[in-house]
Each structure stands twice: as structure tokens, then as C-alpha cells.
Image (cartoon, rainbow, N blue to C red; front, side):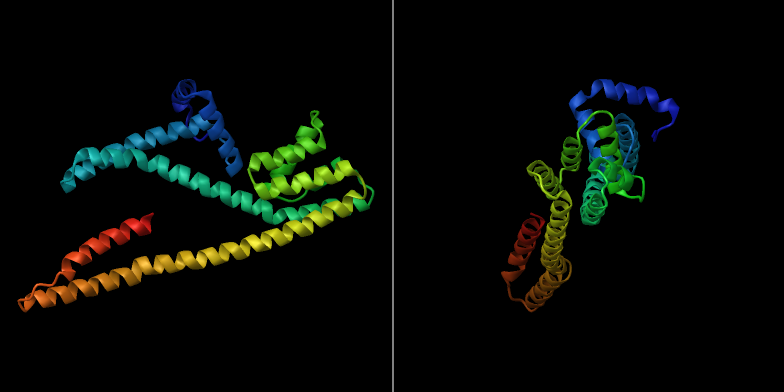
Length: 265
């Protein structure tokens, strides 16, 4: 899917030839992981042009405000790539998380079809034809790989490698190993689904506990620390107004700077 007009296609081709292929491939893989089916060179063209435009706007704005113009150019140029790649990172995380959450239900459907006498490849294809979402897109890709000659095991393991999810990679490897060992594959898949569901519940609980700590730090940074430092400054100013020197005033500024640095890290 093209995201730039045809007039900018020469720039896109030029960037594709200038930038080393391994970087283009890396960006393209991450775009696919995020669910954005666009050319990496087109996205880089859009970032380049946006960076130049924001650089000019930053130059004008910082000059009017009386700041150094090169700072405005630098801020303007780095703003588009920072926003785009930050959004890409969070899109990938959200997509992988969505796939992980829906995988247990997918495995249960596979197990049900296997009990009904359907083959594993046929069951995978039947499920891929129904439903929507990121997992369904990955299943369709796996089905296509199987049809062009790939084995079921390789297609399943490739899905975990593409998503770069340790949880899914572990899950799919357990299914492949269970298939190699033999026995009732439907029972193996259902057991793996239950194990994955329990693991995801544990991850949600751990994430919730971490978020509580993060919220505490954010509240401390936004409300508690500025309030305490402000009170110190007011108290120090009051002491100085009555003719007494208060060393706490100098320490407050140093403490504020140290707190900002430590909290940022």
C-alpha cells in the first residue's frame, strides 16, 4: 500500500538504493509486525520530507522566540522520526499482545477440530477463513506458506519467530514437540492452551503490579515533589526576608536538579 503520491516515488526509490538493504529489510519486518503493510522506503520518504518541513518551522519559531536557530532545526528534524518510530514500537507491542491473548481460544478451536477428525493443516486453514484480527492475518500467512511447500511445523515456528514473542515461540515449540512424540495431539494442544492462559494471567498480574509502582512514581514526580520543593522555596524566601540566611535555599535547587536526573533515569 502506497502512502505517498506518485510524484514522490523517485525519492522513495532513491532512498531504497542509498540506505543499506539490511536496514530496509529490518524496517520492513517491523512494519509488517505492526500490521502496517507499506513499503519501508515510502515511510522513510515521508519521514524525510516531514523532518525537513518541521526543521524549517523550528528554525522560524526558535528565531522568533529568540533562541538559537540550530536548536530549532535539530528539534524539528528529529520530531517526525521520533514520533513515527515510537508509534511503531507501541503498535508492535499492542499487536503481539493481542495475538497472545487470542491464541488460547485459537488452540482450543484446533483441538476441537482434531477431535472431529479433521487434519491439522485443514483445521488451520478452516480457522483462518473465519474471523478477523492480527492472529487471523498471521494464520492466513502460515496457510499460504504450507500451500507453497512449507511444513506445518516450520510455518508454526516461523509465526513465533516473526512476532518475536517468547511466549508464543515457547507455545508453538511445545505443540511441535508434542506432534513429533506422538499420542493424541488434541489433548496436547488443549493442555498447551491451558498453560498459555495461565501464563498470560500471570503476566497481566505482574504488569498490574508494575503499573502501580509506575503510577506512584508519576504522582510523586508531578504532585508531591514539586509541592515539597515549592514549600521549601517559600519557607527559604520567608527566612531571607527577615534578614537571616537559609542554606536550605541553595540545597533545594540542587536537590531539585538531582531529583529530575534520578527520576528521568
